[in-house]
Image (tube, rainbow, N blue to C red; front, top):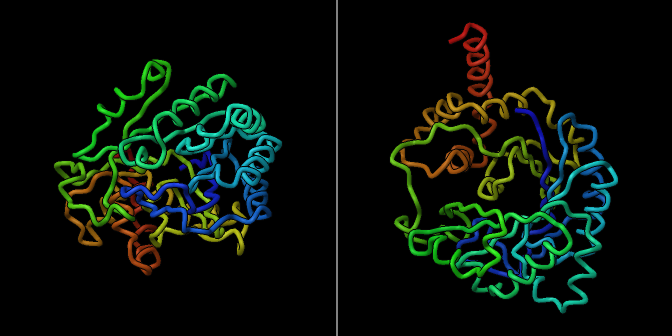
Length: 310
């Protein structure tokens, strides 16, 4: 799987404590990435073939505005396209401050999350002002709406006013992880059978605020053993080029390999997605190490089958 982008998770702190947050973010969390580590991650990403863009997320990265500003500027200096994932709370800033701060950020795209659960902390008026300010500055915006059975995207979409016809939207199902783990299973969308689709990360890897490197950007995986390494111990290029990690990332992008791992772990329940499958496969502390031999064997067999046209 070609690495295409790097997600830098600046913090686990958020102005909100959404009851469906799979990362259990809250105002009480206080982990934040050291600026030197952030610069190191960006510089090392420039040495990895294929990485063309860098995204910043959290938590809520706008809570650390100066850190975010410096990270965006450094990423742009190194030639990367940039994005930020946010809940748009900063739309409540006074007009002058909002325009001044947002215009100082070198952002190409904003991924803004809003739905019934986010709206308990970030009102629609703040979201609309954030969208309007970004559009005025020519910043591209994608709006994501999370869904459960009780609160689907349709009702929230209708509340967004006329601006909804000018934006790109996507919906996603919440998963039973993090703070949402206490919700009844009936609240979550379930497929009729185990999914065998490939990993949906599309070549986007993540560096956490503590230096841990993950092979995707999905928050439900950040609490698992699916760690490739740590930037405090090795360079990003060395981490990604290790034989074990290279085999793992190829395996995760192949439906046949993912199914073999599910079978090895005896996991037969329905899963919401490949991400849900991964978080179950690698959920215990020793699972990755114990599966490395199987991952190499499956990777080799798939390569041989492809060579022989099978």
